Image (cartoon, rainbow, N blue to C red):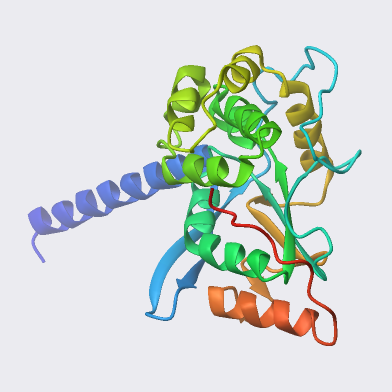
Length: 273
């Protein structure tokens, strides 16, 4: 091999190593750990599911600014949650998530219909715990502002459809669009009957900010690796349950196994409007 070719190969290897180093730095900065590919639906579509690591810095605006104002129907003193589905359902799905978290949006968009179906038939109730992890990792206030708006939607009896709208319209992780209350109010127009003076006032005033911060503190003090964290009756099922990969079909199977011999809860009203 000529000296010229040898030098060229050495230079190519150096450039490749530099590229790898840059990729590693970007991955560390974003704190994104890709952990699995979840199979979506019976047609074999796949969604790459990630977990946003919970090792970020302090959240923007994490100091409590006022008294805790609990949303209507919220539960859990130490682990604040917004419940959906039938309260007497035999199984509970617990989801810790962040409205700015791209992995959470991937999970919700892949499993939304399955969760709604299981709730509607009285098989499960779902406890949503809201975190503000991305605000701490990336800067900004979109996680907090969106979570407060979702809690305001809960006051109006519209949490589920608004929750879904937020994930279906989620901006890029680095775009703090949800830090703008006007954007959150604009999206409320997609939910029939939600965009009211009371909702707007709740959003603009940050009525539930301190409640959201309390929920985020519960997340940080828990043994969670990141968002989303998903549990069925207290057992982690994301990205796997035992040796089985999570998928809509497996979620239904796991719920059926957990509910065997148990009476289903009351039929839940429509969760989409």
